[in-house]
Image 1 (cartoon, helix red, strand yellow):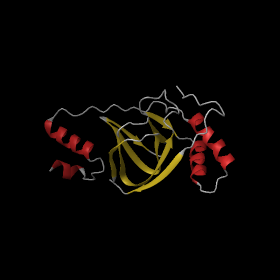
Image 2 (image 1 turned 180 degrees about the vertical axis):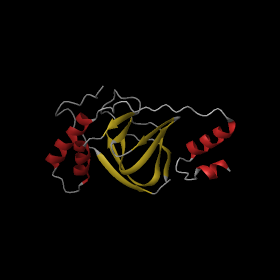
Image 3 (image 1 turned 45 degrees about the vertical axis):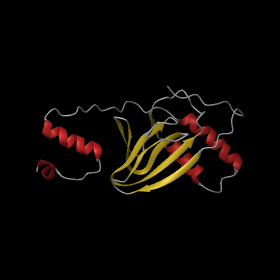
Length: 175
């Protein structure tokens, strides 16, 4: 279900954007934001964890994080450019849990446009008004991977969950 956008003139939304260059394996400790966040990577792959739920996000997916949702973000396998898109906390209140969102070319271009410093106020307001309209939950993307039962494999799985960027190969894990 797509979130309902506010009627024109009801609110002058101010979307804030921030870019973070992240090295492979770098992460942000658990934190939360007063605003809703759309966590997205321009390049690379980002893992976002909320409690015991984890999402792997390539550039075609973002994760909607409702305001005040504690989460951890980690760059996976390579450097990544994380883009934080922050929306006012009273916008889209019906999404009360994290929601994977498809990032189509139009949304990507709008984010690029909004990241520019010299955007005229009227054009910025129009672009900001479009962003909520484009937030569509991603089609099915859940992949259920059960945790192993053998205690040796559980130790490895736990280590990978704790440090997803660990690049040891199979032989090293076997030792």
